[in-house]
Length: 84
Image (cartoon, rainbow, N blue to C red; front, side, top):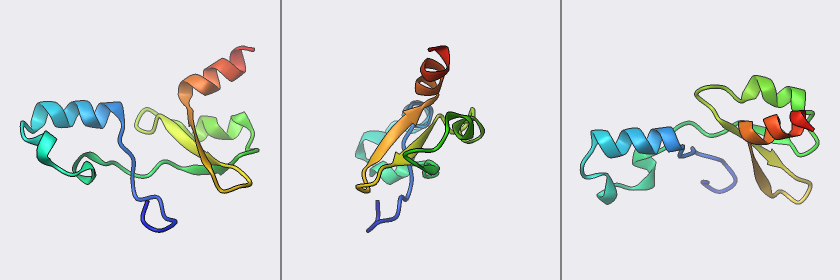
């Protein structure tokens, strides 16, 4: 975060690629492996909305609650919710 702005995210896939493509990755700042910021939805957004935001390239969204706190919602959370 930069002030109140989300500047990016690190995913398992990006980190995995970075480790195999750059031997010196341990010496790099986090921003060197950072991808685009995750989409943000309101905490009370319907599950159906998440389906269009969670994609192969973007495995999670952030849900912002009334207090301004962010919660990560993954595709696995959506699957679990729909399976109930």
